[in-house]
Length: 233
Image (cartoon, rainbow, N blue to C red; front, top):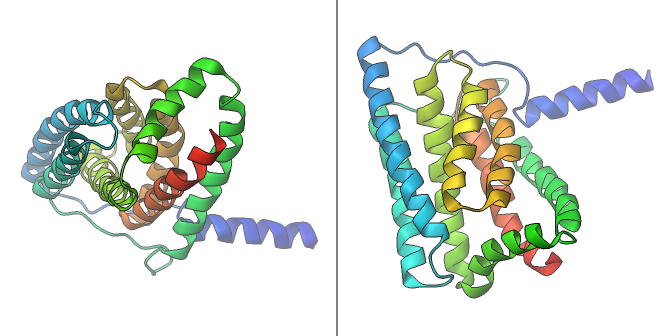
């Protein structure tokens, strides 16, 4: 009975986090699909280029903030132009608490990984270069651009891109494309983080039929990492 109860709790927790199940996507007219795919491709190219420039800008510089805000505008603007997007539901409710809790769980996983990474010289230096953006930047501004870019990335990758892929393995392909786009930064640790995070966010999109769950998880994770990682390194 105890095992059965624990199993039910685990399954319920996964449902609340928006990780299990499959919500049917809205069927779109062929013309809408073609238009969405064209805009998604153009946005991906522009966004990847801007991502590379923004993460290689001088930490705390005006250029960094301008580029990251432009990047958020490109991801979100392209996604919204591509066609309608949906927030999604889980068990007839908007998924809120579960995705936030999942974000903190992911933070714990990454903290454990960070304790290992900091002992490996080359990997430690890659992480340090990213953390410099948080250390040398203005706190509230760093948080703001992190939140805006987290929202914009979800609107694009788990919103427009996922919808554009349709039935062509959207969870897998959005994860791969998100990781490859992150490689534009030239930082392998950022790409690795994307590789770990993206499948989870994709599963949330599939289970809920929208971008709310993945957005809440993404923001919770990314903002928490700004404050958690610097003291560890």
